Length: 430
Image (cartoon, rainbow, N blue to C red):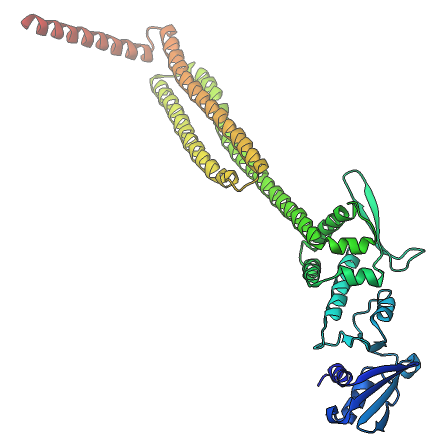
């Protein structure tokens, strides 16, 4: 059996009285069901360094042990108090929850398995004290070594708050209950979670604490905070929800910026490719001008074929870009759809719509530029043919190219006249 539990059971059986610094424990013989050696060892385990005095008094056993510190070892785990006020006077100045206490008047203790209404109130006080201590910037002032000091940033500047956990016994008796203990336990658990948001939770809880301390109140700030425990927890949850919401919003806004950059780079790549081809078109006309000076029949034919190929390849490449832009528009609409759902923050929706509109505007401008390049390629084809026709017209009559085209033109005119005569004959027969 655990040493502390055995000690508590032993004390529970007896009548407890004080004689100076000695605690007398009187137990009826018929209730004494303990192995005395085990009881002695249990007291030694909790730090009692002397022998317990034992005396037989009629049908009772009387045991005496001293409460003087000299009779206990440095590793003392159990402290006795005559009544709850004596206990509180010592405990509130040094709330050491690692040791056991035992109040002989009401037999209240924090030894596991022997909880009482009083010990639960003490536990509630201890947890609240731990929560507020986890939030402090500094502990202790010139006038009070236990004072909790907070410097919490507000809208304009940081403000100093002081909370003294040392409170009067009357304030303790009236200010703590099981419901407040559950709230403190929840706050404590939130602070002790070791994850990436641990510091943020602490900062948010400090802000909620500042809200509570900033309200009008009288008496001990510590008791005021505890009495407003439910409100403190609610404010903490509200602030933390706002923080996580803001974190999510910032993450989504960053994603939108990344998508904006990604799509803009794709559009620039398409435009760069089309511009590279557009830069080659003026060179085609320059090349035609240079070749026509000494071009023969075969060379002029090749020039015509080349002009048509350049026009065809430019048109084909631009058609591919048009298809790519259409596909990109579909991707953009799908990519930004998730940012426009009803549960997404309005700020994210506005950013998504604005970014999508800008990207679609860039695509629209890019398409217009491609259409312009198409027109330039067409004009280049007509200009090339016109230039060839003009150079052919100025060429001497005895050149092979002019003789060939004159022959072709004569044949074309003869064919046209023949077709015209056939059509007229058909109409006369009708």
